Each structure stands twice: as C-alpha cells, then as structure tokens.
Length: 323
Ligand SMILES: [Zn+2]
Image (cartoon, rainbow, N blue to C red; front, side, top):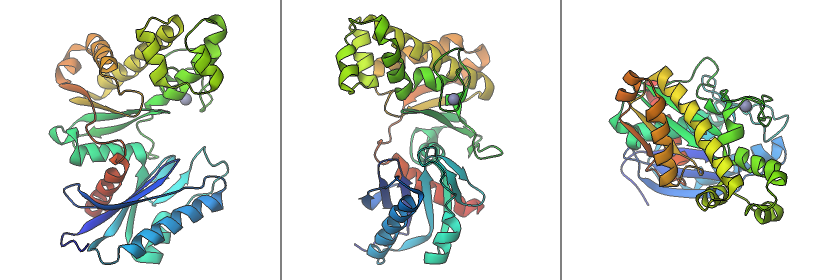
C-alpha cells in the first residue's frame, strides 16, 4: 500500500518481542510486523534486532517513510548519544550504538529512549495526556516506573533516568530489590514483587488459596487480587500492602511535582476497584493545594499492545523538533 502521508517508523523492543510499525502523525498504525528477540547473548540480541529492522525497511520501501526512526527499549538509554547502554536481562551487555549504526545503514535519524518515557510521550501526543501540561504516566507491571511530563515536556534528568519511582523508599526490611535495597516500592507493589511475597509468606499461611498456584508456578497478581476480594488472608495482606506502598509512592510524587493527572498503565492495575482504592488513598493523603490541582487519576486508554510502538513514533516526532 502506498500512503501519501509521510509515516514514521516506530520500533518497540520488548523482552519477548520486537514490534515495528509505520505510524502517521494522527497515530494510525498503517502497517506493522512482529519479530522474535533473542536475549541469550549480546550478539544474538543485536543480530535479532538488526535483522528485524532490515526486513521491515526492505519490505516497506514503497512507503513515504520519514527519515526518522524512534526506538523504545527496556533498560538504560543515553538519549543524547542515541545508545542503548544495557539491561540487567542481558548480563555484561555492551552498549548498542543505534544512532550511529542506523544512520550508516539507512541514512535515517534515530531517537531512542526507555519504554516508560516513550509510553509517557504516547500519552502526551495521542492519549489522555493531550488534555494536560503536567501529568505522570505510571506503569505498574513486572516493575514500576513513571514518565514525568512537566510543562508539556518529558523530564529526563541528568542520566536520562528520571522517573524510577519503583526504587523510591516506602518501607524498611522488605524483600531485597534487584537494585540491592530492601526499602523499595517495587518489592511490595510490582507484579514480580507481590508474587515473591506470596512465595515467601506462604509458610505462615499453609491453607491459603494461593498455595496450589504457588506450587504449580502459575501465580499472577490477578490471582492475588481475586483471592483478596474473596477473603483469603494472605492475599488480603499482600493487597493491603500493595495499596499502602504504591499509595505512598504516588502521594510523594504528587506532593513533589504537583501534576494535573496520573495516568496508569501496565498489567497490574487493570481492575477498576484497585483504581478506586488507590485514588481514595492518594486524595486522602495529598496536601491540599496539590490535591486540588490533581484533576484525574485514571487508567490509560491506549492499548497495551500498541503503546510502545506509538510511543516510539512520538519520540521520533519530538526528536525532529529538538534533534
Ligand atoms: Zn530497588
């Protein structure tokens, strides 16, 4: 298909797949393809990414492609240089110089950022964030992180690492986080953290309805919240600490940043009753002026499958302006 409107190539590099798509300025995905990713070694990782990009670009030559590519990845990114610095999922990984490599191969300009930053940009340009100049996009999934939009701009910080709310301290003597601390929000409120807690605490609750799920290795945060609603004591304890911990993390962030909205995404926050409980906690505990400025706490309306792709394209558009 030939499109008259210029399209931008967005690349969403996730831990289980690579999604590449052609996106219009209105946020329509006119074509996309899904590829496998091989995280076993650094060279297999690099090989799977570059093969995917070559295949996609070769197959879409007839499109009126923009000279910009946006890439969203997990892990740490040097936004200024256009390098993927690494991820804990591929130990010993050396940086991948996306900007230099892709400029050389295809003559395209490349912007790269982490996937929470790109998701926040997707909200800013195409989602609920269009209505606000100051908002937080918070992803609660395997881990927890935030994209901070202040005065219409993404806050990146000195090392492009702003928004790591998952490693803010909300308690003490909790489970050890992968960052090394035992005080982190992620230990109590991420999907992985809650599952770790269930496994750790099950010996005190041998009759818990979570026991068979833990034994089969199939437990998820959805199971924990479902059983909490039915009155399972272990699930209720994990659920209570989830609301308490993420509530504290977000109250602190609201008191510091004074946003107009909090937009939540990620696999853990899908239930509307969790949203209600969390909203009540935040509104009850935030200081008055910040509370009155906070107009909305809601779930994202962008589909979880396409947020990364749209965000990567939005990053490329922003880069056009600043690059
Ligand atoms: Zn941590």
